Length: 85
Image: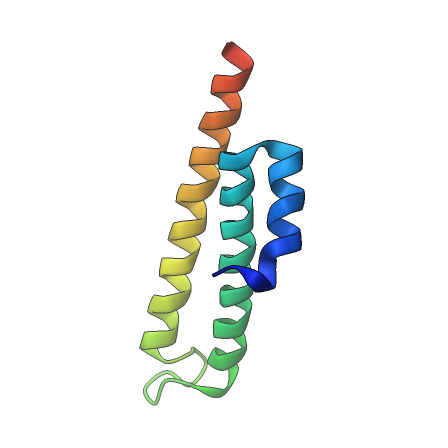
């Protein structure tokens, strides 16, 4: 499933452990998706507001950003739990 990210996943898992390594890889995947959606937004403009990407692209970008935020929160919580034990 993650053949494209296999080396990165292995590296992150080695550095951070399995759970945090997978979350870090998920962040990288979401960042790549965010970049692609952002590039698409340059060409797919709103008819009513041409200075902005179309509404569907804006929603996709926001959902990706929200997902990244949740992953970062979990990674921070896991890191803090490791420090307190």
